[in-house]
Image 1 (cartoon, rainbow, N blue to C red):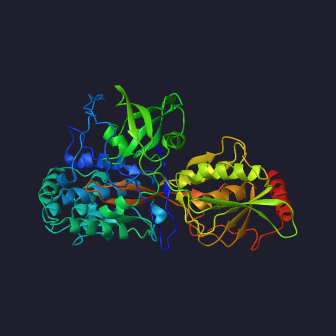
Image 2: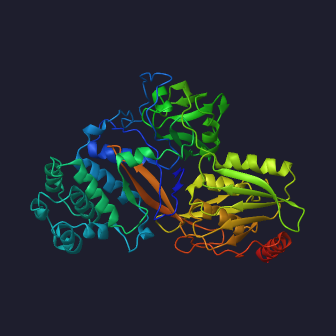
Image 3: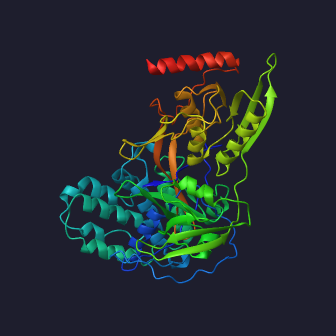
Length: 512
């Protein structure tokens, strides 16, 4: 699974993120808590979705007979008011238990130790440390009524892992607790906050429904959908709808989570990356786009026309300059953040500066706290040779999960000076390390912030959300950015000939 990831900006203090929203499905034939877990896993979205005000549907959604996959894959919307407080806490617990990067916190983490830290009357402690003495679930029957529901889930998990028998009493007690021991939604939110705080990770945190809905600047498409690439058995991949903005243009037109995107304005997108397809969906606000989707695994195929809504603001500012005692024009480009418009606007700036005679370029990433990881990756590709490594991603098992490389040659081959400071963070550090380690740019300024963790944003079923650290990045030279930052090559702006010589020595060293 390779969803578009979000590396939230480094804290002003820590991180500020913006999510996308997914639908709230409940698969038929599953108990509701399991449906919540299924939906939570599917609704993990990067900061590429639009979360704004409701919009007027352009095309009314028509009821569609969806494909059956053998296990009742038909989903139906579950309204927030149908979710109990206990189910909400369980949903959050499951997301973290399945997704959290264990070493992201300030102390060692494991599901069992987390259970202990959240223990209620030492119930969980007794299970974890004395489980070998247990041959039944008598202790379950003595759980205090006020004990948070996630502890019962934890006990169930530990028991299953240690192959104990007779789960019936536990399941019965679970059903008893489901009757409503968490009396208010505010209390459920408070429990989730404490659960997340116990992890010791400043980037993993709770978002209220209002906080979740306010974060709209990272819209990837303008139509309120998020795509991910699903690999097939033959090495190809499909573009699947990962999440949707409820009442957004795509949702109102009839697009549903799990649909496959086939074309955009008549252009086949099969084989394209999620980022490229998202770029094709972009356009000026209030213009129209037509897409073709396939519902489920076996159809039907449907064309839909929808009106674009919010569009990401430009983060790129540029000008042509001349340095003192040097007649060579210099192209100066400042990228304030990496949002959906960053790559497109940067390409435009580079072309205009080249046409104006720029021979060298200064890329200013000072005070750029990050944004969309994929936008940062696409920016780095503009300056790298085909096959150059951009970044490595490391997951829960501490193994390299993915190596991201450039597919084409550089748009700009001249020496590049890259300005950084202690507020250059996250996606900006990905760009800086990729260009530096591949001998494409000299870094000038201060050590960068040191934020190399990957977050995903999960929408919970009441419209709130949680930001969870799910992985980390390692530079092409195999250095861990997180907590360390990147050391610059120069504290002051060098002469361009000096920068050229530095990069030449770097390439020679790389080949030796």
